[in-house]
Length: 75
Image (cartoon, rainbow, N blue to C red; front, side, top):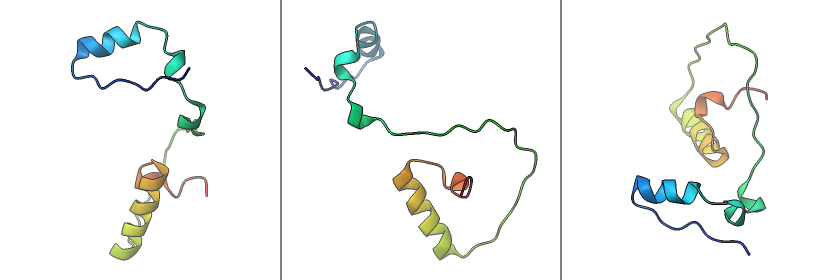
């Protein structure tokens, strides 16, 4: 049976929960694929874009759960 994580207000409550078996709290639909960067970055690029475009990029990044500075990578 799947459980919902309780609201915790203290570190002690969190520590107590983490000492238990958490498998009942894990829901497959709460996971999403992620990618990791493995190559070291050695170049910096500065771009000037309109404020409107920047706001659109930030909106898309927020929906994807990533930093807006990383939205152009891998595309």
